Length: 491
Image (cartoon, rainbow, N blue to C red; front, side):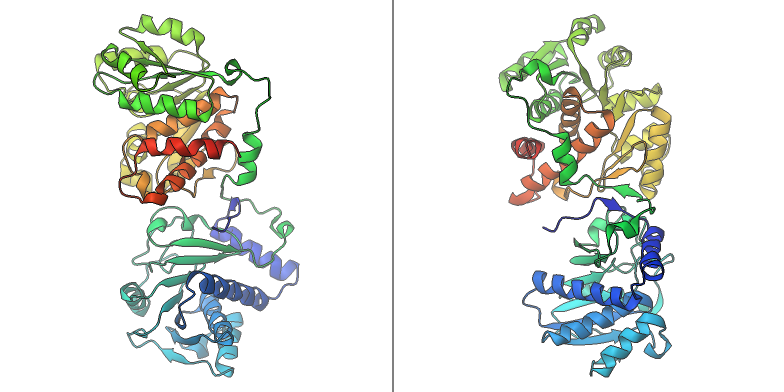
């Protein structure tokens, strides 16, 4: 799989990079358009090698221009290619007009939209509307999108699928479902947020040979964790290391009848490299945890006083997995909320926090959208409608570092938020959040800062899921990630 760059830019920022490249550095816009189309042809040939009859659907503007150039270049390579246009080509301007003119001058077939696609086409190219779309798709544009989605051939989208908002990933009325999206100049948030996962397919990126320094001064909207950041954070251990060098995690949770969550969190912390992991759990199943994973030190905790000796030995707390909201749970909450140790909070720890709000700068909170809604006193729909704003509110209200889980998990930082582009639907399974809690706690125990532990932890968790999913999405278990962690944590 192609490696994507670390920076993700807003649509306005990508437009500024375009402008700078063209106006300040003298690269003609049509040259960039030709490079974009060439990249799209290259990716299409690699991904769909048996497709020999392409139909390109073009709208107005540069997205349509990309489509015309792509059609011309594909014809050079022997592809039988035709173009359907939703806009009178005579009304095109600028580079898009040049692209249409060049295609037509070389005998390219351009037909006005009549309601139907080529039934025999084995690749459909969406060059209708690009990332600058701000209103719902309607009229003949919407008709074309419906037809594209109904056609049996795979779909390649240029820059972003028509109908997907470039900054939020929301569907604007209707949207084309692509099997692959080839995006240009800069990654856009809309490729990863909101509804994007159901519409963009495989993401491929082409920088159009724009030098990195042309982007100087253009701030990204989000950043991804790339391989270089993982390698920097997870350096090889000294030969003389011992377990005391890698921290002691105390997992507090597992209310009566719920031992599984602390078991998963505890093992994940160990698999991440924590030196020691203790479990403070309800007395009814402390012995069971030792039997299933003897490397975990399981302690029966009947009252808050039983926590004192455990807290004295711990370096990091993981609080909330399987906690419940009983009287026992509330007692654990009152005690766990006091220490000054770095902590990761999840699950019912967050629900109890919402009932007794308080800030803590040494804490990482890891809510899914439903838990975030409870913490913010709003609805899950509101959280999902603007995940970036929800993340900022979580960090502001509760302090420390916030992780907003879900497709396109977000992590707050002091500057540019982190956006996780790894992960898959197979991870929508019980216990996945408990594994994440353990991974982050294990990284904290090894000396990473709150922000680094959260960002690296989210990324490693998602990549482990992508390795585990190779056997199929349905039926994946949270425990399937354990076997994948070592390979990821020892780059």
